Amino acid sequence: MKNLDQYIEKVLYSEEEIKQAAKRLGAILTKDYEGKNPLVIAVLKGAVPWFADLTREIDTHLEMDFMVVSSYHGGTSSSGEVKILKDLDTNVEGRDILFVEDIIDTGRTLRYLVDLFKYRQANSVKIVTLLDKPEGREVEIEADYVGFNVPNEFVVGYGLDYDENFRNLGYVGVLKEEVYKK
Image (cartoon, rainbow, N blue to C red):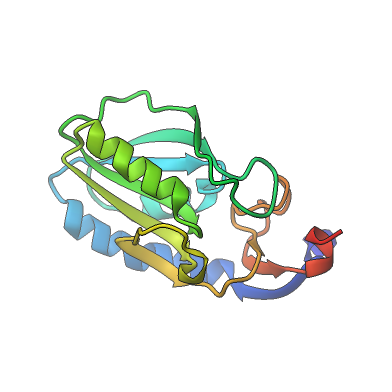
């Protein structure tokens, strides 16, 4: 990825470190969801690489589904308005829900989804995130399972993007400021 590496100020988490986090959290989730057949939901597009790694480490029955939700609309900061662009194909009533996210920043998207799924009468709603950025919070929300806490910097890679680019980096890194401040 030499072409993309030039835009990265520093690497925060390598692919190996991310896979170790998936293994660590997968073991915990296996124990917590044994016999419950949770509905594990990836919030697309950013969560895809993390979702794939994490679900392979969960050694119990589960179902998968996907949602496309946006609050960024192409920029570098949340617009504050959450839109569901693709809803689930599965009824969640009475189900144990596990949202898989790439990052929790402002918290707006997940706050909206947790409230929505409680309204839809899910039995439980929990969140596992690769990255948690508590300094970015604008609403009250906490992840139940966290891979890493990140500083309040613009991070990309491993599914995280800037204007739909950099998702394919095999690590999480800080994007150079000149890239997004043009």
